[in-house]
Length: 204
Image (cartoon, rainbow, N blue to C red; front, side, top):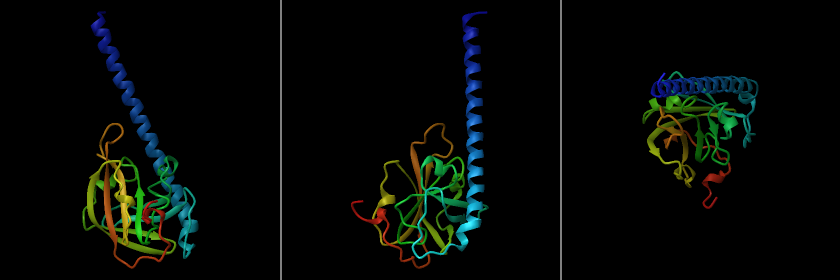
């Protein structure tokens, strides 16, 4: 057998093995995302709807809110924290940003290939509903944009009550995505009088 043919066969085999490994990793990641949502839903059902607090606080991994975009077939449970272990459970509320319904920017991040894949279908004017143990809040999407990973708009000081959904972009990109999709929505009901979040305090 010629060395050229052997090299071709080895290259083909390498592509096949790589493809199988990527598919296996993707399937495992999808399994973890679904299991994480199931556990978050169970904890939500047991604890959150009955836990009404004037100034709620959450530990990493705790369910914070149930989220859905009106008119779409999706219901997600947002957990506290944006570490890898948190984002495997569901979209994560970034600690230090405004709570759902509060004044300031409520930042929620999620993986583009699992929980936040549906964000590619969100359009300006869509309504995002966040249900918590202290109320249900409706936000209206007012802007959608692609920003670099270094973008600091999510941490700007503001007197508005905003929701900002962040995920990697493009959605179908092999390897680490170079940009972020940022969806910003404004609260349609009066904001809750929570203390100012760290992210809304200049210099923090």
